[in-house]
Length: 485
Image 1 (cartoon, rainbow, N blue to C red):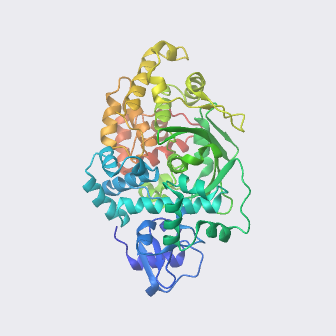
Image 2: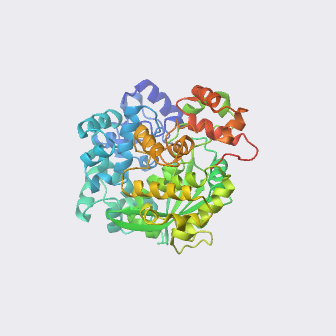
């Protein structure tokens, strides 16, 4: 990644939030690196070095700033093929896939050679995947030491370290502090232990939280999700090292910072990397709204902070899309609630509205057509759900943001009962594909005043490569959502 020092320094002096997470500035006189939005007095230009990632800055010998906390910087969304490939690998590394499998497995999953992956990764982040993974583990540990009361031993293992000794040695070598010293520096007293862990996830403003939470609330699966006021909650299931972890997450907007406050149940402490990574994807926190607004022009002017809600669980969103074929949002929500109640797993939570964890693909794959259809849908739709579940359970279909877009769309279209609208909607949310465009959607057509899907498709060319965001703005423009789903 090429960084123009002049542009970077101007962004640093202006504390321009548009550049937060897009580069990091290291100061040679202090050996500390910061985000461009750091509130300390800007250093002299001759003392600044600019890096494309926190890992690159740490690899060069710099330690993270304790004030701006580089581990909180937002990620980057992109449509560039090489950049998207590298970021897909980074997402898998954040989920600890490198620890569990190895680089060759990650490369195979992305459909490339490990040599090509190393080359693309180095061009984007300035370090090797292994160096990036090491920095991610350390930064997560730093976040847990700062924001939670987890014992140091639990912090080490939750961050992906195989031993406390290795964690202590690397932390001291890289940050010149013992883990306990950092905690004492950040807190006069260690925070009291609670039944939940609290985090902040940053974004580049603006962020239209009311619109995003309303979108999720209108489609919330009863028992699995709930929106109350400005708060979004849901149950989650995450597998780490072959073990299943279930719990809940709660998200509310921060009153003082461009960030969302995320509370995670203590039962998910050993699954924090994938949980936080999926929350980021669900709420589209890597978006650069200024880049999207530039492409969409007048369409985005009314709601410049609108995002494309993604998925915590790609299979769950795909099921919702299929249940929503040819029916209203409200009708799809009703059937989805029955589906979760019938086949999901019960979960005790502090919230009356959260009672169930959405069923796994393996569970649905073993069901009969009649058992699903009796919930209130045609037999053909029930068969589609079973076929989808078998493809996901058998790993023939990967419904995650790092999946190959074209190959996944082809596999989706090949499933009986999955047409272009369903495939594009799944790509829009489960695959986080910013150029997905369900052009036959009734809400999109109504917002454009069109009845011909071919003309809608032609009109969408002006919004490439951010057509998924255009869809959100078109839906938002309607007084009442009429999109089928």
